Structures are given as C-alpha cells and as structure tokens.
Length: 164
Length: 288
Image (cartoon, rainbow over all chains, first blue to last red; front, side, top):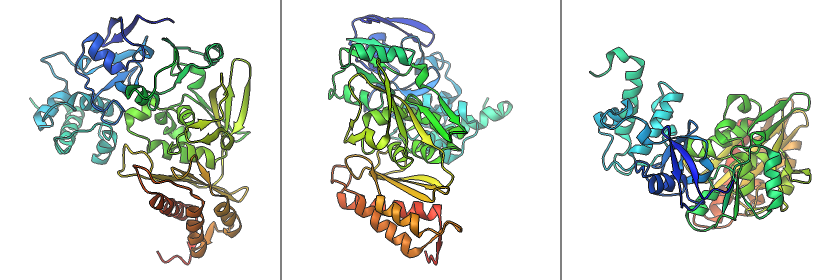
C-alpha cells in the first residue's frame, strides 16, 4: 500500500484523508484533516486520556495510533456517541452531577465511562477509579465524575426508576 | 513514506526482508510517543503489526507444559483469567501497565522490542526463563530471553528479524510481580521484581526491573533459596528472608535519574523481593 491518500471510517462515515504526513497520529488526523475536534490533545504520550476513542470497539489513546494504520477499522469518537442536542446517558449524568468544569477532559472521560460500563455494569468505586486511571482531570478532583458513573450505573440497572 | 498493514507473519517478514530498515509498529504505546515528540522519525516504510493474525493469539500445550504467546497479544488479553490461571505473574505485571487505554494497545512483543529496563512484562519473562521465537524472511530461531535482552533498549534482533512468539514454561508453584512507582496507576516502574517458585525442581527465580541496563537475575539469592527452603513445608526462616533481601539489593546495579535515586532503587528491590518471598512461603519464627 502506498498511501499518500487513505480512507478512515469514523462514526460510520468514510473520510478521505489527503496530504497528511503518514506518521501523523490518529488524533491529529481526526482533528486537523477530518475536522472532528471533540477528541482533545494534551500530553501526546498516552498519559492524559483526553484523546480516547474506540478503534474496533477497543478504547485507545488516539495520539498513540498512527492514523494511516487505522484503515479498515471502525473508529468511534465522542461525536459518534450521541447526536448534538441529545446527549447519551453518560453525558447527561456528567452534566447532572457537575462533573464538567473546564470540560477539556470530558470527551475522553465520556468515552472511557461508556467503555467501562459496557464491560462492567455496576463497578465499585475502586473499580471506577482503577478503570478511569488513564483519564486525567485537573479541575474536579474526580468526586463528581465518580458520582456521574454511579448514577448511570444505577439508572441502567433500574431503567423504570431513572430520572424523568 | 509508506505504511504497510500486513495480515500474516509471512507477509510481515517478507516486507521486512525487502527493507530491513523499516520501522516495526506494534501497539504504538512506546514508538508513537517518540514520533509525537519528534525524537524519532519513522522510516520510509512503517510495518504495522496490529493486524498480523498469527501474532494475535496464544496457545497452551499441556504435554509440553508451556504457554506460547503471540507477540501481538495485548496486556488486556494477558489479564484474561484463561492466561492468568496459567501464568499469574504475567497477568499481575500486565495489570500494572499504564491504563486501560494503554493495555488495550500495548503488546508483549512490543515490550520486548522496546526492551526498556522498566518494561513490566520483562522481569516475568526473565524469571520464567522464557524463550523468544524470532522470524525473518529466510528462517527463524528461538533464543532464551536472557540472550535476547542485550542492554538499555538493545536486543539481539538481527536486521530483517521480528519477534513472533514468547514461550513460557508452566511452573508448579507460587509466582508474583510487584512494582514501586510514585502512584498506583499510570506509572513507569521505579523498581520492580518478579518471583517464581518451581516446586518440581525445587528452585526459586527472582528477576528485577529498573535496576540495571536490562533485567537482572539474582543468582546468589536464588541459590540461597533453593538450598534454604524447607520444600516439604514450603517454609523458610526469618534469617533466610533477611538474607534474600540483602542479596537482592546487592545484585541490583541501579542508576540515579529523574525518576529515582540508585540508593532508593537498590533498597526497594530488596523490600519487594522480601514481600514476594513472604507471599510464596511460610516464614518460621516470623515476628512481623
């Protein structure tokens, strides 16, 4: 494959990527070539989690994926989690719990929380902390983020008693 | 620049044979950090290994009493109970790597390829005397991990060779991994230790990370344990435990860098080895 041009499938849509440097991270391709600005870049070394996306269903740091290697894989970004104006239950819980302050870490955390709750329906506080260890927030002190995860977990296990 | 995405080991080896200077990209969790920082310029050809199906599986051979793990198996996959039951220390070490995001991408083969003295999988591979199968377009060879790890980020890989599999013996006995860092998660080891007991051969192996140019085996402490352990009762004396701590610290050859001091690292591996020894054996006359 000589791939000065390549195609990535993001949130179910094919995007032609042209004129990129092939060593570029998936994060840079998403933001600078495709124009999906939801995934954030901070550390570019896998420490902060603000660039978290799903690649073939696996939560990864998009800054550590070489963009051109993700050809043919299903990429899901924060923009693919829910349509604008209709937040997912995790996004709504973050708002309700006051888990969003500056908001920079929020897209990565929402991706990580969706992934966590797919794998573990009712995680303990320790499990929540361990599973979210790769997502750094410098505002909240994490308390309200953990509150939000708990709230989603409870709502999902008793949907009839969910918030109106 | 070209990015190749082979799907078979033969194809990956052929591409590498044609262009031995190509950059091999496994999970990207080490390599992309260097690329992003501008410390490493990818070669004209990058060979992505994440979709080489031959590298993505593992198998258990009950007769040979081995587990053979493809180089592309991720840390998340190594934490699976099916592997964890067979090689508990490897699962424990995998759990201490980075975050879920890192463990979903990073691979055991990548850990070996980078060959950092702080690589969390490497003390386990060293303690278990694992064997590494290397494949090229023209052939293959299998070498002990001790010979594979040459120095700080230096391996015995020849041009055109890639890491295919890691073969681990199944031992009858307790094994574990312990690590010191500045916090519990997302941390590179300041010092780490793997201890593995083999009740059939009546031996104990101890391997240390982050305290030398590559993984350090503690031959004198291992010899002491082999002779001093009461193998009937799986016990040893408090004096032996103390000697193990001292011998392990003495076996380390750490440096001082931005993450810790040589003195602390040397002390820490002794503490970790003591802790693991107490988990593996009953201590006669222990007062602590």
